[in-house]
Image (cartoon, rainbow, N blue to C red; front, top):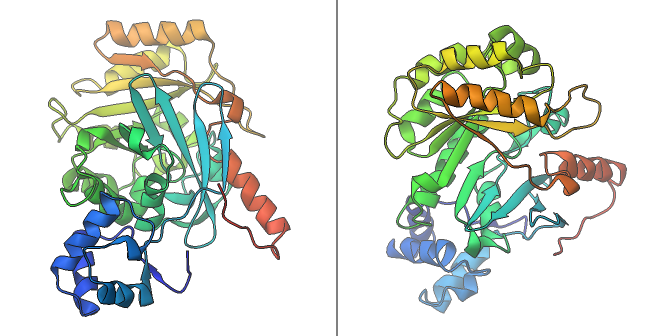
Length: 355
């Protein structure tokens, strides 16, 4: 990328039309740009051949496509790939590609680091280093080598989507709009710990699936491992969710990492069933990926099965999510943290983009 030029990637149709008019092009050139970007996935403005050469040259004076290839990757024996992408601000974010039979899911990041500081999450250990732009988020899809294979996108990698809501909503609009990727909202899931005011806005303005990070139904315990509980409690989140209809195409799920001896007891199972009573939802039980310097352990398989069976027998649709990419430490934050540390130690060096 040329740091002196403005990326076209990440702009909506209305914004592309405005760019066209501001640069002396007809407004319909904005629609042409959208097709070249989100359907054709071109690398350069010069490739937009139904725009006149003179107008392409005008655009190229101040604009570029803005796509950036990954700079590092880790490949798991199960097919999972963790990519590291550069951002406009010179930072790095992770993206995880997860193929599974007839599905291929991409787990994208929305922030560099995270303010939420959940005890069990490596990303929070980085601290917060900034929101990703719409271009940064969309680039994780645009520049993905396996882009054509994707069936689903989940906002579950680095960062809290509700804390960068404007850009997350902008990207989901581009992904679902006819001028953009024309995906069904059913193919996109946005996760959240629950952020006051922001979660309601997301539910009102988006039709994408929503996944809430619960991890324990007991408020006091949740606050001890997830400080966001103090801003919007899990009980308040559930009451908010009950105002929306999840009985049709839009899906609600609760993410629940199982920690041995902490949140995997019969008491927790009973409290969880009581908490979500009346909600059309599912619960995803997740094995804990160990991270450095955190004294938490994964629940054993027997306890996970017992927990799942209790929920299922009490009317809560529950799955145990398969662990993927364990040999490459696919838990979010490990690769980017290492890169950030290396960057600080070699702050005078320029990191070239390669793949």
